[in-house]
Image (cartoon, rainbow, N blue to C red; front, side, top):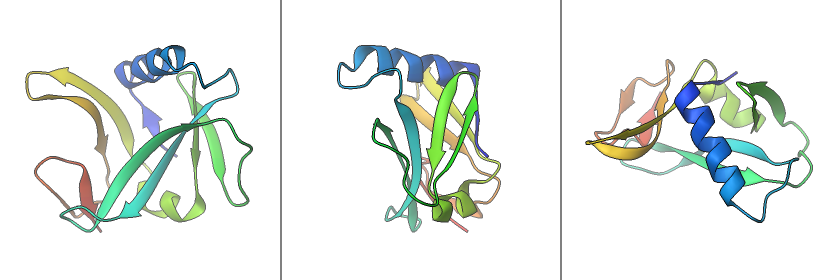
Length: 110
């Protein structure tokens, strides 16, 4: 399971409201893909299509989240946050499974 901070939940809701292609049945898909300077990268996106076989879904702070089974192995226990400070704006991940992360925090290795 992934937890979502209050700040991240508010930003997800703001983005969903601003995106005219999404509906009330939209959810946030969180994935791990190969790439980045540490080997694996996080990927976020909104989807409205039905869940795929093996997808795990849950909700935290009003945010509907879906993760494929393979990504869940790497993301279990991760916290999704949102930063809008002087050091940059964007979603950040605190992943207890990551053994090493890159300087920008967008890729990791286990």
